[in-house]
Image (cartoon, rainbow, N blue to C red; front, side, top):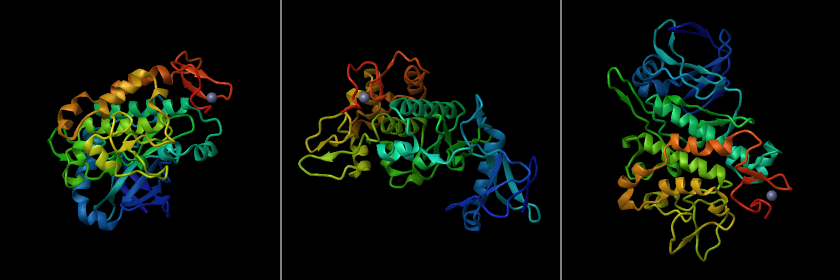
Amino acid sequence: MIYRGRKGDYRLSANPLASGGEGAVYAIENCTPSVAKIYHPQKLQNSGEMLERKLQTMVQEVPVQPIVDGFLKVAWPQDVLYDKTTGQFVGFVMPKLDSSLKIYQIEQDENHRLKLFPHYTWKYAVQYAYNLSWVVWYLHLNGVIIGDMNMNNIVVDKQGHITLIDCDSFDITNRRTGERFKCEVGMEELLAPEIQGCMMVANADFTPAADDFSLAIHIFRLLMMNADPFCAALVGKSVDSSTALNTNLNIINGESPFFRQLPNKKVPPWAPPVSILPPEIVDAFKNTFTYRQRTIRTAMKFRTTAEEWNKLLLKYAQADPNPNLSRCRNNHVYSAHLTTCPFCK
Ligand SMILES: [Zn+2]
């Protein structure tokens, strides 16, 4: 199948590489560093006109560089695709990924992670957190809001790099016409409290600060062995270690057992204490996760931003020998403010 773009014709593979709810992704035979997403007819019927204007905006008005320092940071749309005969909008061209690992495969339990990365240490977690904060900061600098920063949209590689995908769901504003293409989806357990308060995500007003909240949850999970800051174990009850209990309700109420004494909730027994983290990192989390339901609007101004996270994490993410990290006899890597290895226990 051949589709027309602004930059020329694209010859797509006969069969898709992958297919999802919104469309299918195809290899491009005459442009192998890129792939094409072709929307399903149903999606085009429902929101084709809006998607066409949104993708034209992303390609022409908000052109974000996908590759920075030699690494693909964001699978930003590169061209808009049209049917050659009818001229109808069908999809878009984007950079091809080298990795298919998702961030949840890294955040997940240790045994699973060790299968993927036999040499995984806490240094990797820091590296991912640093690179994730960088790309969020980079997009904010370009006037882009991510909105749905869910774990399926974050691809990682074995060197510690991060690529954001599914950019067509991002919250984009055309700076010339002022038209805004809102993000209308989101994963409940990652959404900022002011977004949770909306009856429907489609009505929510995403901001860079809302992204900063989701970013902090990902960083926390990376640095804290997959513990969710709002996943509490109920006091006096035994709970399966992987169960998130009303995480979104805890987010609305600002009830993180890691940062607040709560009468009926506590840190899950399997989770490490926050004291394994450098004190300045703990403070950055406190600035994001300490609030009450009635103080959400005031507290969100004090959230640690993506830029601040990036600058804070830099000294721990730097190459070895790194004086801010220690290594124990069992080759665990941990923050140098600790006197003994927290991962040997
Ligand atoms: Zn150790």
